[in-house]
Length: 315
Image 1 (tube, rainbow, N blue to C red):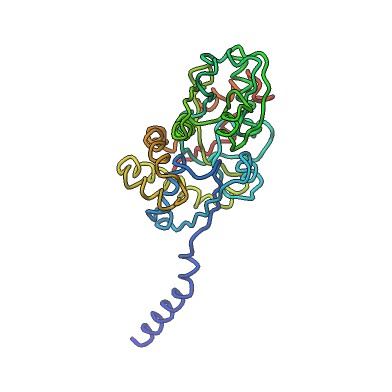
Image 2 (image 1 turned 90 degrees about the vertical axis):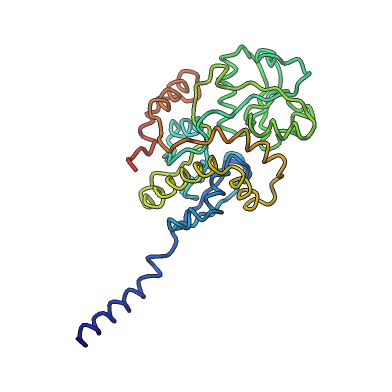
């Protein structure tokens, strides 16, 4: 009997030594595509509600210094995950970057070509010969080129405005900007007293696509597949929570991002909520349709097989 007690004590002692390492949170770094806003609300809800902690994850959320930073740093393995855009992934894959899509955040296009009303712009061809800004180099300027080809804009001057959408439009530096979201910058401009119009890409020839996705590198995924799978499930859980408890979800977000303007974020959230991804399934057929469009209209120079960049493993 005493021998059994000694063995039990030894087992408990060894278990106590191993417990801290087994229970230690797995850390993932996540870089956003833009400054924090309600597009990212499910991430902050998961943080606030302890969904990440429940699965043994610790997520460090990082804002980018430049609008094109996130994907490049994820592809280089400098961050574990980044929020990116489907068209940007296709372009990166065509250029040989190490990218793999882990999941979805926004499942339909939000990007617009935004302009101030009262400037003689009622259809895209009115921008022929004008100055058109874009927000994300290597993405929005390429989308702008395809949009122009589709809609009779034969000549224009493309100008990188980065984060400075409002200032560039109101100061007259550009006549329109490619990249603002119909659910966010339209609200921002309205709250500043400006009347805006916009062309929705999907209504002017650009195929449907996942606006915001989570991207990593294949090298990173190889070493962190388990926490990545947990992250995927947590985002789905957080989006479901936001749909079921929108008021609480918004409060969670505002507590996590205290610098956010509550008036703007509240109005933008109401517009954004229907666009959060309903699930984390990556539609290979739809992605391939966009990739083929990208090749046809010059977004990329070679064909992209999207099966190589989508993490479609059964969960």
